Length: 128
Ligand SMILES: [Zn+2]
Image (cartoon, rainbow, N blue to C red; front, side, top):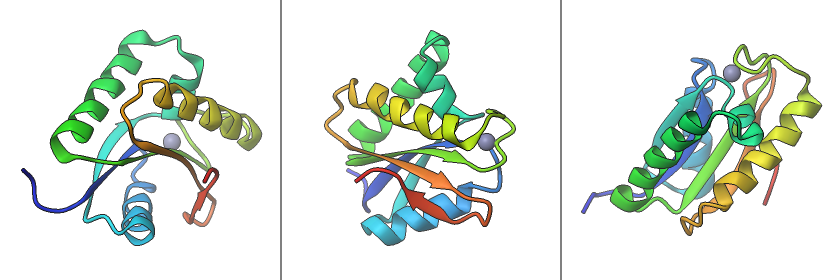
């Protein structure tokens, strides 16, 4: 058993979004730690479903977080000025929604939320 409550974030690798996402999740959900799964623009990867290896890698890492750290919440994160997914915000938000559906389809029994990190590096929740 591990002490402390964990959540999980499927976040961009971008160094500007790590701390805002960790702090927001700790504050909003009262968790002690956030397991971080990073990819460049993970919302596109999960929404498009083309990179099976990449998706499998995210799934395996999430499974470790859920089974070993008992995480009950996974946040999928997209952000402003993403070098890994250089498209418009509208497309990113649509991808985030579809990425959330992909993660929900894995049936890990976790709550899935989608987050947007804006140009001020502030976090907004897109789903309930
Ligand atoms: Zn990014």
